[in-house]
Image (cartoon, rainbow, N blue to C red; front, side):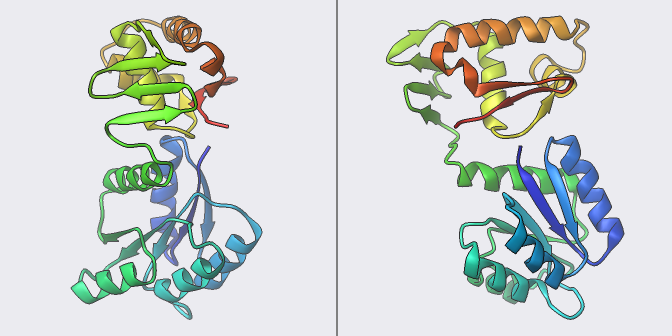
Length: 222
């Protein structure tokens, strides 16, 4: 499960980001100022930071530079009420991965978080490969140790969605609504049956689909 650190001196901003991030399956930690964020990053491991620029005492640029000294590969998305080109350029110069101007759409922010994490985990839009598991997204072809697997369209859609959200805890409701659609009238057993069949097709890689009891599933590489 991916862990996000949200750094903003405005509690309302932190709360709305936390709400949307948790809905997407992320674990969220908060910091209300730059020094707290730096301390947290020295104590805990995060997968990505959402960092405000305009904060008292220590601005986001300074925070980013300090964190990057010890965690150079940690992705950072910067939030700012200012959209000037200088701020954007300066942000990228200190190692920011993306830059979002306030006011922002929380849904768009989550899409940007997902995109940055995909780049970090080398998940392209064309293919996925892990050991002997190879998936051609454009051709909708799955190979397991060189053997082509005949997945049903829904099994493939389910696998694709799990991989595109690698590392994220996905509830049964979220999987059903995104793979089957909001007008689906079946029940959880339909999802569980497809997961069972999908695991059978994946063979030794079936363990990549992790069951989260009482929640749903997560695709996770070792």
